[in-house]
Image 1: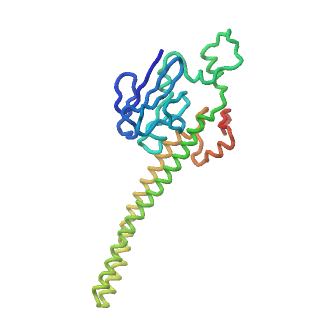
Image 2 (image 1 turned 135 degrees about the vertical axis):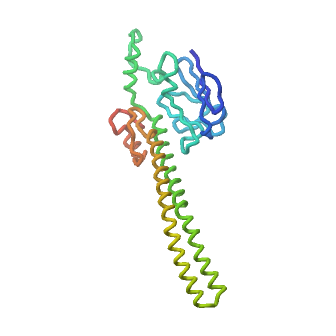
Image 3 (image 1 turned 120 degrees about the horizontal axis):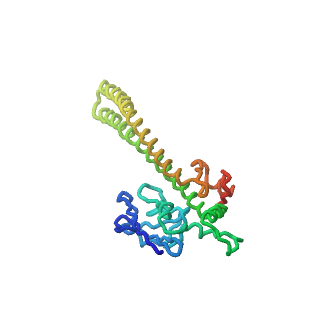
Length: 262
């Protein structure tokens, strides 16, 4: 049975995935997934921001449920949308697409192999090099997001304090220029010092609020990418501080599931 699923922010019908309007990078009719003779493919419908499979922008590509697909980017911000391929594949009729990707070798064609046996044989798959590309991209996007948050937080905390501190300094300079009275100058300098201290106290509360906002943003980012930075076979999560190059250098899953990444 052939099947097509349309995906976008304005698609209509029963075989559709309607992406919420908040995901602004996704086009109105962004992509389509086609199911034919047990093989799934995804096709980009000329979207503005692209369709990405395992970190690579595509026009058309074959899919398995273990691939990672982002619409509108690679997940670097909240306006991209990630497809839940396992749920999509579960809706396809009769057969599991991933069983066709790695056919069982050295099996007598005359044997009557049950679906359960095929699934068990499929668990012997070890080469996850293609899927590891999306794991690598998740690490890159996470740390890019962390860098952006850090710069934003520094600007948010430092800029108001710098601007406010200029007010008493400027006031003192003006009074010293227009007044020749030494007493007035001393008073101006004292007032500037008092205002600087008062501003420091007033901005402490704002600084605390900014730190809380930064902590929330960091947590949101960690929760988002922790789901992606994991072994594509066993699903166990990697530490987001563990560089993908170390995993690639090791060449296999550190949890011993048998997955190889090179």
